[in-house]
Image 1 (tube, rainbow, N blue to C red):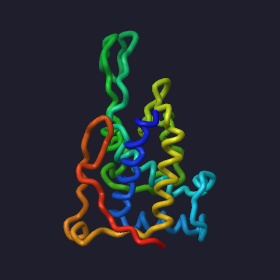
Image 2: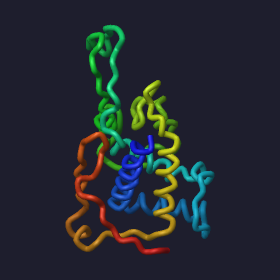
Image 3: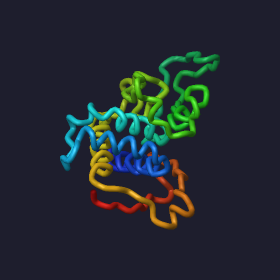
Image 4: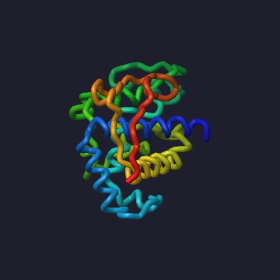
Length: 200
């Protein structure tokens, strides 16, 4: 569980930082929220997460566009069944492509756009009850490290944003951030994000 949760959590924080740097208005909103809720306190605590709805929305939107694992663990039906007009034979190996679900234009408005606001006032969550957002899976095969991972991702991202001001190196300002992703067991950036941190 520890090994599975290490690179997925760090990849999620890296993707969140990448999206925020490409969307300055979202970066400003989440930093303003942190300044108002946390104030001059340096350390963010787990109890603070519930008071940071925009940060939570940023994480949900990052999970939608860049799920930690693009394919869920395979499923296998115990009996032949029909779903949406398709026959799925007993014993088939089924992979759920959560990366594609997160970018489905029939499910999401402007699916390729990073918009944390879509979750403000929404009940959509990533804990397995809403099929449009399943970064950790659902049911008996849901990721056992989900609770730890979500707490760590929120705390890591909030700490980075609250204690540092972030900017792009000159070459990234000029050429833009490479958004290519590498499909594997986990979804990582092909070119790691290298940015400049200035302590606040």
